[in-house]
Length: 205
Image (cartoon, rainbow, N blue to C red; front, side, top):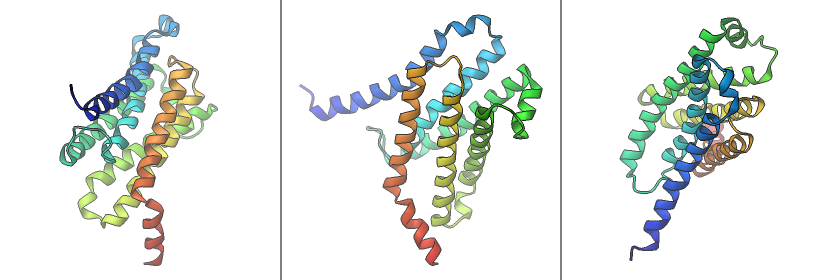
């Protein structure tokens, strides 16, 4: 008989897989897909996939996924970060193909729909966080952590607001559930890293 810790670790991975698969599955079964163009469907699924990655990223950063060494977790964190950037580009690019005027209005923050503004805010924060990650070795550690974590919080908040305001293919309950998990995972990393302590130190310096 395997120790309880083994089953607990397995349960964590199963729970993560379900948290990612359920919103994607709900979207795949949505009746709204019947009258959507293929490029619009790609845009939607890229957005959902990107949001799911936002749940995985803080879990990797905080070392909360079992059976992964710190080195592997950091490596996966970088890979998934790059994948997140690609998913966002696909999401926005596919929407551009579908309706360029709407995307232009969103990028110029002139869109009448609030979810577009939140989405653009999250998009630029994703790009900025990726750039900061690339420049990590050129920045003081404390500054890098503060800037990167601030951008990550903007990404999480913007994405959740963007998703909750959209009446799209993702199911309401699965969307709310994934949003809660993304916020909780991000908040957990903020608490564990004691970002407010670093902020006070930076102000004193």
